[in-house]
Length: 263
Image 1 (cartoon, rainbow, N blue to C red):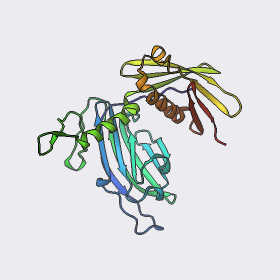
Image 2 (cartoon, rainbow, N blue to C red; image 1 turned 120 degrees about the vertical axis):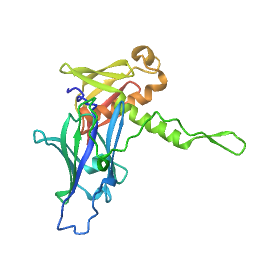
Image 3 (tube, helix red, strand yellow; image 1 turned 135 degrees about the vertical axis):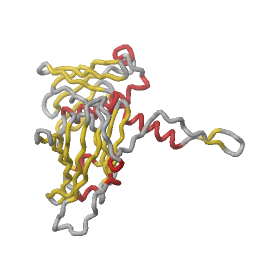
Image 4 (cartoon, helix red, strand yellow; image 1 turned 90 degrees about the horizontal axis):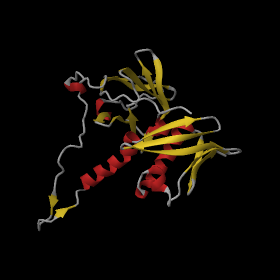
């Protein structure tokens, strides 16, 4: 099995946006700089795009490394949509260099943009027109009070914490895969803690399965709290499907995660 891709924490800047003419779609909406945003934290970075029209109208996203003219990324739009128009692109796997994104529609390039990835520690030379929108977790939250002076729940802060929990699994935790032939194991890492989960190849419709400690033995075997068990297992199941079994489905039970061929 392959190991997780290397990550590069240098910042990115969107440089140019291009719209292509498609004769079959004369009145298509144009993609502008208002449809993209760069977000980076100390532990993650994203390029967020909003399709100018409903996402199902588009075919694929293709990213080319302009430095060596190689394909760096290719996905069907339907597979990477978040909602109806949003795409959140993890830019950590992209090495420093210049990249071109093209989105196709009806089999032809519809719009695209160029972005530059800088080496870690290098501050981009950003003009006003290309200044990325930066979000920070260091700002003090606003305290809301009612007429009696009682503190009210900060819905914005609660939403922000929910988002952080979602990106926590994606950017802070890491999964490494090791194969020894018919079996192997996964190393799951989070916040300096690691746990090992054994894997074994299956037979018939079962491709492979991952052994899980039961509730009684979870904390002793993994070092992670029981409260985190469901979250960690769900994350391992989804990421392993993405990294190692893209054409498979999986089921989770008390003792394992089973990956099997789609029927």
